[in-house]
Length: 344
Ligand code: A2P
Image (tube, rainbow, N blue to C red; front, side):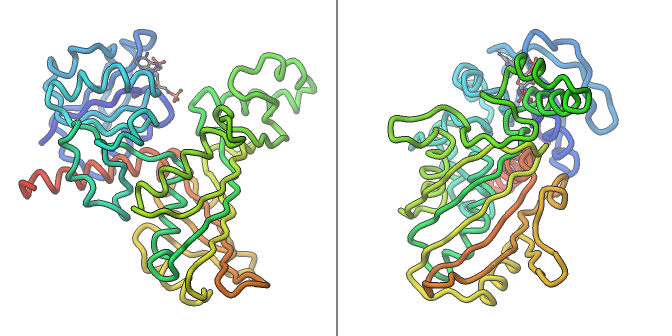
C-alpha cells in the first residue's frame, strides 16, 4: 500500500485524479491532497470521505512519507517542488511540460512505451505527455506499426479544460453573457484566452515561437517522437474551440507502405484503450459528447487519400482531463506499482 499525494488537488485535473485513483483501485494507504495556501483547509472527497487540503510545502512529502506524488499545478510548481518529493523518496508523476523533454525523465503513454518507466530512477520523475499528444500517439502507434508513418499533418480542436478550471469558467461566463446580451463586457473582463472563446475558435494555444509554431504545437512534434522512439515529421495546427472537455484532432498520415482502411480499422480496434466509431451511413463518428467522461480514444472518418495510396485521413477524440491527463497518469502509476512489486 502506498501514501499518495495529489499536488493541485483542487484543480480540474486534480479532481479527476482523485476520482480515477479510486476507480482504478490504486493501493492507497493514505491520500494527501495538496494545493496553494489559498485553498488550504478546503475539503475534497476521496472514496466517500472528506479530506482536508494542505498547503504545498517542500517538507510535506517527508512529513507525510509520500511514495507517489502526482503533480498537476503548473510547470513552475513542478520545477520548485518535484525535487522536494523525489528527495523524500517519492516517485513523481508530473502532468506539466516542465520535465518532459529532459533526457533523464521518461515520457510515457503506458499503452505505447511502458518499458521506459524503468528509467524513472534517473531523476525520480516520470512525465505525463501533453494532452493532444497522448490521444494522437494512441492512434498513431498501431498505425505506425502497420504502415510505417513518415509524416503527420494534424489540426486540433482543443477544449477549454486544457486551460484548467479558469478556462472552463471563462467559456461558461461568456456563454451566459451571450444569452444575456452583454457578451462585450464579459469579453473585456477575460483572463485566460487571448480572444473571445464563446462562439469563436482561436488558432493560438500557448505562446508563439520564432519558427511560427506555438509551444503547444512544438510539444506535439517533440513529444510524439520521444514517446514512439521515432523521427516522424509532425506538422500541427493547434486550435482552441468552445468545447468543455474533450479534444478532437483531424489527422493525415503519410506512410512508407500503402494504406488500407480495413486494416487500419482492425489494428486500431485491437489496440488497448482505442475504440473505432466509423459508420458514416448511420452518422456515426467520434465527437466530444461521446468521449467526455470516458477513458478511450475514439477514432473514425477513416479514409484513404483520393490521390496518394500511402496516405490515410482520420478523426480522433478523447476526454482531455481523463485520457489526456489524469487517466494516463494513473495508468503510469499502475505500471510503476507492478514493476516495483516485481522488483524491476
Ligand atoms: P489552488 O486551488 O489553491 O489555486 P487548474 O489547472 O484547474 O487551474 O488547477 C490548478 C491547481 O494547481 C489547483 O489545485 C491550484 O490550487 C494548484 N496550484 C496553483 N498554484 C499553486 C501553487 N503555487 N502551489 C500549490 N498549488 C498550486
